[in-house]
Each structure stands twice: as C-alpha cells, then as structure tokens.
Image (tube, rainbow over all chains, first blue to last red; front, side, top):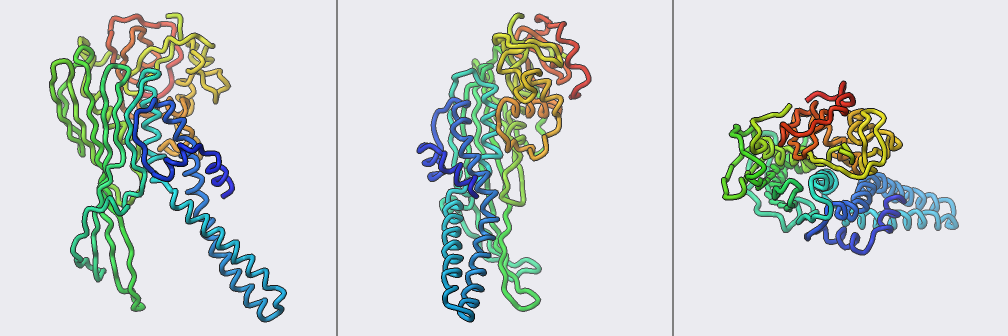
Length: 291
Length: 126
C-alpha cells in the first residue's frame, strides 16, 4: 500500500492529470511517451496489487471495531478508544481504497498500449513523433454504453439482460523509419450479460459475465519504391485489403480477438496485425526470401 | 562497416552504425552503448542477451508488464521472430547473425559481414 501511495506522490502534475482524466491525446516522441507513462503504469500496477489486501484489511478493521465495541461495553468504557481507533483506521483505509479505485486505469494501458509504444520506438527514427489517442476509462463506463437488450431466458437462469458497450480505446499513427506510414485503432465491443437465478435455498442471485470482441485495425502505407506486395490468403480471423496507390501500396489488416472476460488481449495480437502487412510484402526488386 | 553491427527495428531491421562502445562476448560483434545489454553487465549485445533469455523471466509475463526498456524490446523481438515472423532487412550491411530468423533482405547482393557468422549459431530457429 505504501509503495503505491509513494508512487502516486512521485507523479508529476501532467501525470496526475492523465491519471485523473484517463485520456491521452497528442503528438509524442515514443521514448518521451514511454518515459511519461512508465511512472503511471508503475503506480497502476502497485495500486492493483495493493487494493485487494487493503479491502480485506478494511473489512477486518470494521469487524475488529465491532468486537472491541462489544468487549468495551461489557468490560470497561475505558476501552472505548480502541474500537473507535479501529473504526477510524477502517474508514481511512476505505477512503484510500475508494480513491485508488477511482484512479484505476484499464489494464489495456499497461498490457497492450505500453508494449506497442516500446516496439514502435524501435521502428521509428530518433526524434520522430507519433500521434496517440488513449482512453483508459473502464470499458463498461456509462458513456460507452450503446444499448440494453430485452430480458430473455436461458436454461438455468430466470432472466438474462445484455448490455452492450463500444470502447474505441486506442488509436494512433506514426511514420516508421522505413518510410511506411502506420495507423492503428483498437476497439473493444463488450457485452455485459447480467444473469439472475434462484438458488436451491430460494435466494435470488445476479452475476455479470462479460464477452469481449476486440477489433484491431491496422493500415500500413508502404512506399512502392521499397516494397512489392505479394498475394497471400488471409489467416483465420483476419481481413486484409490491398489498395494500390501511385506512390504507396496501402494494406488494411483487420484482426478480431474474442475473449470471455474484460482482461486485456495479448499485445502480440496487435504486433501480429502490423506484421501481417509486412508479411505480404517483399523488398522491391528482390525475388523473395533472402535466406 | 566500422560502427555498431547490431540491427535496430522490430518489423523491419535496419543498420545502427552507432559509435562502437565495446564488443559482445558472445558473438564478437561491435556494439554501440545502446546495443550493449545492461543486464549482462555490458558484456553482451542486446540480441545475444535476448537469445540467452529466450523464455520470459520469473515474474515477467508475455504482456511485458516489466520495464519496457531496450532489454524488453529486444527480448520481445527475439520471441516474435522465433514465433515465425521473418523480418525485412532494409540496410546495406547484411549480417548472417540474423539468418536464423529467415530475414528477408532488400539487398541480396549487399555487403555480407562474414565475420559475424559465428555468433548466431545454436540459437533460436524460426
């Protein structure tokens, strides 16, 4: 907990603003962007790690306060400061946990966006900038809700209500060192399925299950002088379109990843989508693989 | 080639040519300060260090929740290449060091750094 609080204190005003608004948009040099975001990622990691034990400790302190209150009422009123101290500590901890939860960023940030920045840094000329748009609010935030379906029945459940969300959380563009222009967007379509059932004891219980479809769309405009496009079939779950221009060949790659939770996708899926464009080209003038 | 013999880039490889800061104890290539691995005590190049650490370290998942420095990037690059991606090489100093990745070259007739042939042997297949 103290590590997380220390990490929070060490953030610059710009980083704190980013943490609070959960939005990032602008033109950044990848190295500077990684340097800017790294402390935020570290705070988010420590915060994620600390919140569960802090929540448990809060609960334990409330129980302890209640037990001490009973003991002090039965033994001596001079013991009354003890339950009050436990209650005070519990409330303070609860406030801290709630504040940390409010500042929690989507794990997409640490597990998808940051690795992509680190990789693109390697493929860009030193000093070149990339355009980035990041929305790190939760994928099921109110503003991302697009509709709620009518309740329906599923065997084993009394009622199921699906709510759909669209979260276009990540996008950007960069000119790479080889002269190519890369643009990408990552959009999560989330279905939160609220399932209500009656247990064997007659209680009504509701649980929410999530299904997520992540669409990674990548456009790579490759200079014709350098690259020639080779025809190749698209892999399963991928769409590839090739557009021939005067000076550039543009490849549009769309990859879809389905998951049954809100957990971030493997960043390799984004790398693969970009790589898919490069897989389809060969150096202009070369007959194929050189090795 | 008198500069750094390591190649930068992820989706495409390109020459570094940075000012030499040392030689890799594993492959013998000359490397600039950026391409020498701090984790190896600057005795290995980032490529050799990544090849030696093929599997993610304990506590490090494939999602790169670690520091995301050059060490991580070159490790991720090595894993990506050994998983089947054949990078394009867009430089003029072709090195056999990267042949194990089935590198596709822009210049098949380009200068070959024969002296770097030894270091790449025995590591990841593509």
